[in-house]
Length: 235
Length: 391
Image 1: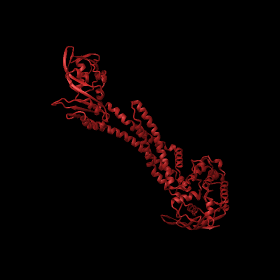
Image 2: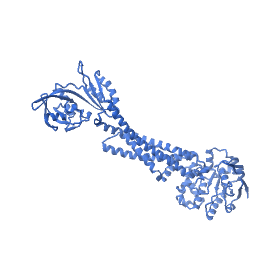
Image 3: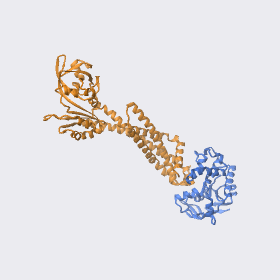
Image 4: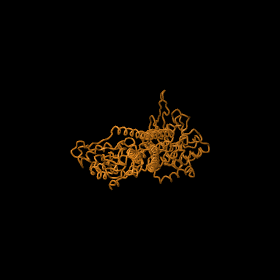
């Protein structure tokens, strides 16, 4: 996948968002969450998006993951307009280009760590024999290979989030989109997660976009943005 | 999503939540077992029941008579015609009968009484049992033996008692050994008659004519109309059917068939309701499962699962449930068929059992798809963002 990044992104950014807006309709009228978002992310970037609650950080992240359509604007991924993709192509985009990490350590609790990491590979059509090395490589990056056969429900909060990061990595995405990944973790585990993100970004190829409240986390990112009143401002 | 992965993941999911599913699995398994038992054993049990149907009116017996009143030449049933009738599908047994009156002497007193000349299968066709002794069989007929069976009333009138087995009776100057006394629950004319082997009577009793009556026992009451309509053609191929009368108590037949239909209907309805309950159970559980796994669905979509992957997974889980229940039902059904076969002494054809197994598994697939489709479609159409934020 990273070779494709190099090919596609040699002369253009990995993510280029221009004049992106998102409005919601409710019974009382229109709510504008994102007004005029412009963002550029290069391969290997580690970008923090900060902002108060309800400012639209998660909405922006969902739009970048093609989980939510914007009201207007353009979104080029490796130079390709991805807003016009149909549902199947969107799913394919999420399988191969994006790794998502959520705040609430969303693992399949009744499954083992191995099974949690196997799902993205199943959906990507990876041959069964090729899965174990990829799963072990992803777990290696978050230092959890010894937990591979454990049930997800037996892990600590920090371990769960590290498994979630490994799951986001297992399909070797071009960008990791993390929605407050340290929101439910203690300080030590939060820094461990950010360490992993830094290593991933430093290894080249994969960019990381982190939505966070925590200034300490943001301080460790290569670029920081503040989302306020629907506008994204670089700090 | 590859098929092997789909089934592996779905089976694993169902197994891990097996406690949630046991009630519907049991309902479908019992319904399937009932269906297999009904399909496999139904016909055999009906045959078994029909053999004793004279208790409720002998509705499976078709009576044929050649009307010799004012006939120029006496008409009678040839062995070839009887054999052809016996070969008809749905016919279990036939019996030829001749009726006459002959002088019977006992202790110097003579009386003309009804003598029925019958072949060895007569008792089986009519479902008669002896009160004492035995009812003579084909060997006595082919051996032209001088043996007889008396009706119970006739035994009382002649000897003053019913247990007269071993005594001798003089019929038209010949002595016949009484080998049996017929049970009392037979038509009055038979309670007062003496029964002789057909061959012996024709040789020795001048009053006995040739057999102008033929009794036909059908396998089940369902066979009666077809057999009755085929008889004139079959008889006509071997002899004149000009004076042939086919007698069936249609009123009684209709009543028995109607009663049996209702019994069968209620048994099938009970099985159907059980399966329906299982279907509704799977549907209900799958709806609840989809709701409780909303976050999982959202998460999988976020990982790149397509709508069709989600639909296939929930449908496969419903199928695993219904097929698993179906297989349990097949095992219970096989055991039930085996036990019933031993208890009733029945041997249903293996082909019928395999057919019922195929039918049951097909039904299980239908139940799985029918009950799982709507919840699966609902799961596949879930909005990813709403699903990942579902509490």
